[in-house]
Image 1 (tube, rainbow, N blue to C red):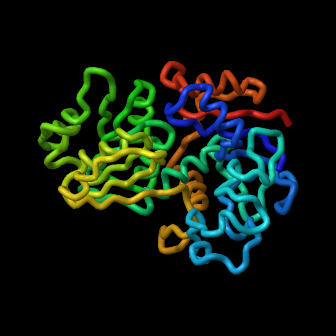
Image 2: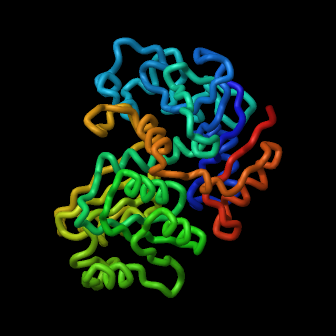
Length: 348
């Protein structure tokens, strides 16, 4: 695969530059593959995007595991088996390498030809958009619900874009840390943006907008009586995972999209409110949409073709690979530089 541009997958401000550099460069951590030119098996010169998951078929495993048979390839049980080294996706497997290079390896089953009417930068956004589209397809709210998206980074914005592209009329609140993120959320159809900064109590802000009450126990963090009907957590830190459990109303649903590492969590809110908590990982090929079972990437492309979503403007910064140190520094301090999504561009 000869590559033209690839997205940088940022660490959501969890680490400093040195830590990010080690994880990205040492473990070939990047995963959001973008516009490439296929040499095989597609016709030479075709524009394609790559679905990076290394499920049974790319691994040459037969018969397929039960999840892959159903198209739920993000849940593949053979990520350590087959003809490839262990790893869930391109960028996490030593045999495939990563996409910070002029060329990289992908299996034919992972390729999606870019359809007519989808420009290069929109095609570039198909993978991150699909990471927001999958949890929405699996947890679509009713029009009478109030939804809270925690985090207005690329994935949080893609969750918002997915909700509106799929026709949701729900009231959507978005927690945004930076002014440029708030502007992006408004552009994508947020009903209200709640600022996250020093001196602002986000619990009181959300409570005021939902008619909830904030209770402050003697020990522990605040908890709401009332709150939003559904939350999408899109950051993945200890606090951000805890907040939706405290801000979602009793009997509501908290959808965890951001992936944390090891974290300490107060589980009492889940029991006190009888919350439904579910997680979402990447995307798969078994989405129920318009009466048919389809892959998340196929739905993403269709929505772009239909003009229901346009995300090329979210690629705010591009770099040559030789400028990777500057790219990582800007990603680490995205608030200062106004970075939503960054990409490496390769000469062809």
